[in-house]
Image 1 (spheres, one colour):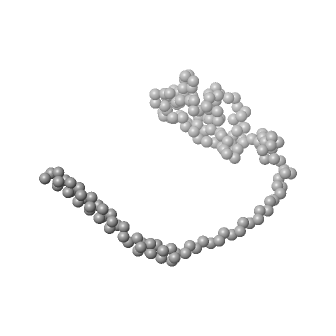
Image 2: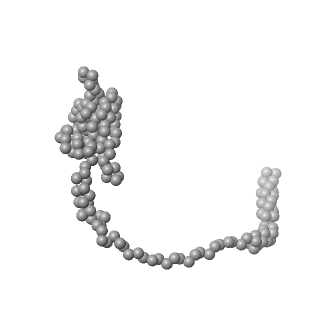
Image 3: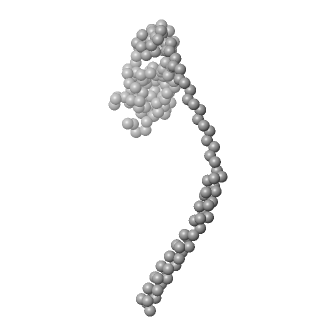
Amino acid sequence: MGRSTLNNGRWLVLFAAVAGLSACSGGDEELQAWMDQQRHEVQPSVKPLSPPQKFNPQAYAGLEGIEPFSAQKLTGVLKQEARQPNSAVAAEINRRKEPLEAFPLDSMTMVGSVSRKGVPYALLKVDNLLYQVKAGEYLGQNYGKITKITETEITLREIVQDAAGEWIERPTTLQLQEGGR
């Protein structure tokens, strides 16, 4: 009973699969007729392209002036700036530089703060040396003047050039670094 029933079951499943597949093959004519009808009903509306316009070249009129990237223009601008320096920059250029102005700010690390006689001091680590600074002293390469010292940060006023070449003041801070670098 086991083997013949198993063979009969296989034949039955095979017959059902063939019958099911043959039932799916009909109805193509109806689908094809619908597709043809849709193709005839829908007409694309494409606007024609406009003809290209004729290019009329223009003569360059700037040949008489100074070339924008020439050394002549650069020296002229530098001479003008030297004659009319910004008052904030002029004061900074004429004063004597302090030792910590030789280092960029990102090479400095605030490692602590102390207070002596009510005056707060910050402890800075630069090139494995420890420096003690107070408000009014200068740090960094952008004329950074210390304006305020707290237990956790140093507030500076830097003078930098913006994208237009104008000198502007910018506030900057150095944060206390836990554990040091």
